[in-house]
Image (cartoon, rainbow, N blue to C red; front, side, top):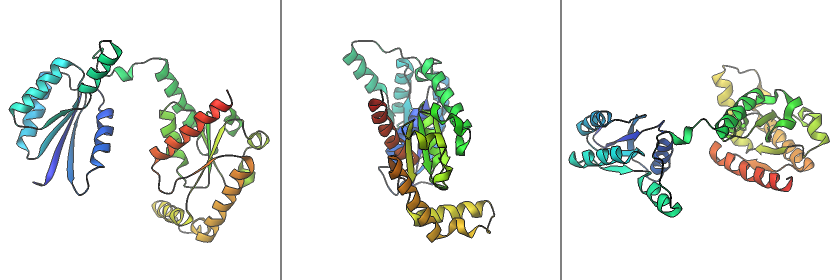
Length: 275
């Protein structure tokens, strides 16, 4: 354990921002062991003192924090210095720089990004819509979608849809078994919504489907995991995307976040051209 870094993530809100920042940070350093200790809604000096006491007991402790209250942030920084703990504020300098640039004082209110405003309720509505329109459900309502994802089985349609929904996009996803599985309303009007195809390499899809079948303890459906059959599915899907003029994304080596970023770019172009 002596070679393991103890990372203390201290936030005055949910900690989501800090989690994402640390995820991006640790991706830059290979072969390093971490143990993460997360503390959300940390808003008193007493809470901070207890956390730092625990951190002091471990070797290789590092403090990262997002605390917008200046006095509390200074208390954390000073206490960490007194205890000899490396401590880094993630948002402090950025908020100060923006304050100077915009010539406006920051509110310094914890959870300011989670305010229950119109944008928040639109995001909740998008999540509810997306969950109701998963895996080909309610295809008669696809015209209400911001984005429609098409793809053969196991091309990450559902997780990508959910991620997009959390960004505020009403997303439908439809399994592409063959061209007949596409709703007639889409075939008659291919530009009804922003339709995007997802595809992947056949060899990769074989592994994913086999793992899926094993997790379900199903071994009878050999066609589902057969390489030749899968290659035909993918080839037919590509032909279908091309026929209807739908852009497609190869998700083979992309994370859900990367795929979603590409989808959002396509959606922005679609929206601009159809404004």
